[in-house]
Structures are given as C-alpha cells and as structure tokens.
Length: 120
Ligand SMILES: [Zn+2]
Image (cartoon, rainbow, N blue to C red; front, side, top):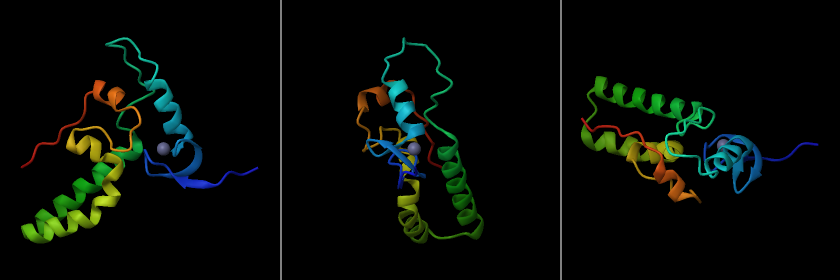
C-alpha cells in the first residue's frame, strides 16, 4: 500500500505525509521536541538544523559567493535573492533568527538557540 507524496511544510522535501503537513521524520522530531525535556538536556536525534537544511544553506552560500565573484550589482543581487525566496523557506527561520511562520509550536522553537548569520 503506497501513500501519496506531499511537500513537507518543515523540511520542504517530497515525502510521505505523516500528519499536520509534515513528513514522518519531521513529525517525529516535532513530537520529541514537544516533550519539554529538562533544560540543558541534549537530544542529538533532534537537531534544529538537519541535513536537508544544511544543503539549502550551503547552496545559498555558493550562490552568494558566485554573485560576489561575478561582481553582480546590488539591484540584481536583490532580484536574484527574491527569486530564490521560495527555495529558502525551510531555512528562513535560521537565517532571520526567528521561528518559522508555519510552526504550530512557536514557544518550543523559541527555547532553542538559532543560527544567526552576520551581514557583511
Ligand atoms: Zn519533513
């Protein structure tokens, strides 16, 4: 029996739907994060920035580096950046340093530290 594939609202990957618009991996991760683990407890099975996020961040960094090497002007960089916006949605929360808009557990997300990228 096969289930239909959907684009996961958390990781953006096309996978089997578990519940709440999430794939099984993200749904289980969210369930674990909702357990209110004691402060200082490290759950290495539930990283905020996962492999699929890392891939997007690395790809975006390569694009920016390429635009820099090509000497692309500010206006064109902003145009290209806006075209890339939908592709960056899964990691926007880490780049901007605030919780994801579609998160149903925003208070849980606020507990975790977030990656902050410095502007150059
Ligand atoms: Zn997912």
